[in-house]
View 1: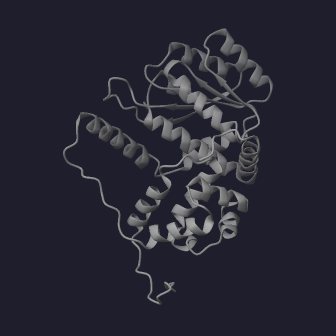
View 2: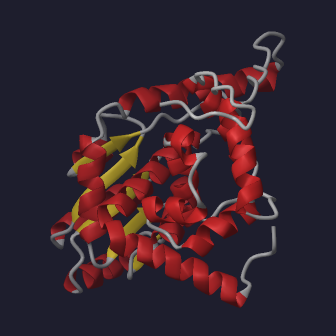
View 3: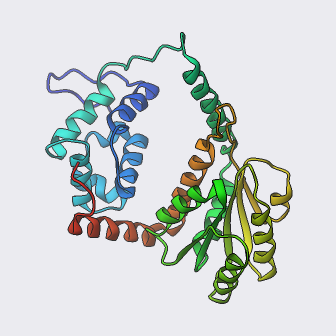
Length: 296
């Protein structure tokens, strides 16, 4: 059954691609907390029905508190939820967005296009989510969870660890090779750890392979994020998740591995279900109370 505007005329049937483009334009330029991103994800997936919901309705469906939905609207720059809902309705039932021209790209834009093609490869490879979900379940259950990244892979390991700490009680990032890594791997195994997430991007450090050999020696299993399906590192891994690394720029771009890490964290949060969402809510409430972040 269609819904009518105040004029009494029925809404036109919206185009799904246009709705998605409009909503991403509405949401995309703002820094959102993990809980707020879950709200945004729900709105993207249920836009045509969500335009008629109250803030309480959305909170119940997403599994967050009603104030979280209100803070979400404020984070997007609206004075309240009703004003946000009006903008949401315009995004769903308003006019189409203008597409960006595809011609006349400069050298850097062409390089970005090559990155987009790599991300499309990653997207197509994630058509079957069974392996991603399996790895996410393993990592979410590991106490503590170990994340290993050396040299160029260290920043991504720290990013993963920083975000994982919001929903897991004990996350340990290892970015120093040699005997210090062996010591930390051994202590973690003694404390009950079962899995190591290793990030191995080119060029692949010899010390990372040595660390994974030690991890297996002390009884840990290895999940590896890398860009090649065959190699010395994949031989040492129990599970491998692949993401392309773009080499068209002067320095490698890790957009693909970063997206894959984010997707893995998203799937881990789904695995943790209510427990993980409660941890995120607690962090958001604490951050608001302590005024950790600048106001929007």
